[in-house]
Image 1 (tube, rainbow, N blue to C red):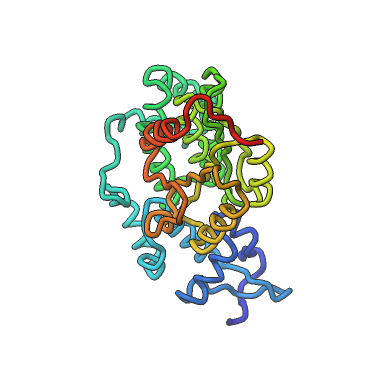
Image 2: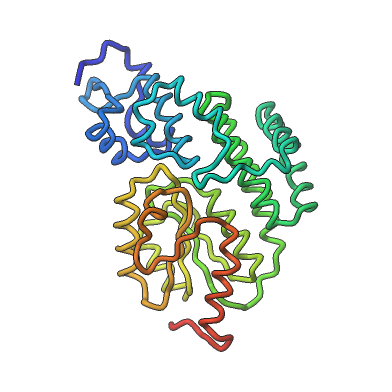
Length: 317
């Protein structure tokens, strides 16, 4: 690698880059070998350090991955080409058009994010939730709004702190709504979390909302739980299902290997349900894993589980 001619103040280390973009260190190193990008420099300690232009491009790539693009198809594009692709992206990875039913309202929410009106954003989103109900709010508002936020971020029209304000607001509104849903003693008992390399929790929260509406008992561990601790929690909580969320930025091999390891550590009767934008889930579904292509699949899978487990079913201690 060429020595840096830039001052340390304009470089970012690999750990900071991982936090900034959501791309794991392993993913960055694999891309470096496979695609010859990124092309890190070296800091005074000999550690990888990335110039600002590469950081900006990696942000754009990660956002397009969240929209369904494969990294190998876009990584050699210029930043301008990536930006153009984001601006003209009218369909998701499956070819379906984004929901335009609430376009004006979604755009208004984006304006509130950009003008930092956090309390007003939360108030108006709460009103929309009450009007539509939680299920429609998740599928018809939160899902397309996530896409808009991601696209704005990839084009450089949204700062990191503004995205964080949006994420926190969605979490507050949805958590308040979930907490109002009665928690009956019905099965299944579902443990929700992500693997250690997955810091994104909005998809997990959206799934929890849909599970709760189906009268499932949800136990959330939040994000980035070690695999061994997931298995320990599943046993301690006597759960029937472990539900996991994977974003598109995760290394596919790590996802596949992690699911295989978790399957070995869980009791045979405990199902693993997985969803999200990670391509490996949809290209080659791991054995013995229920893969969700959309949140709308949740009610039928809950019904399928209940049909296979009569009301007198009790999880083994």
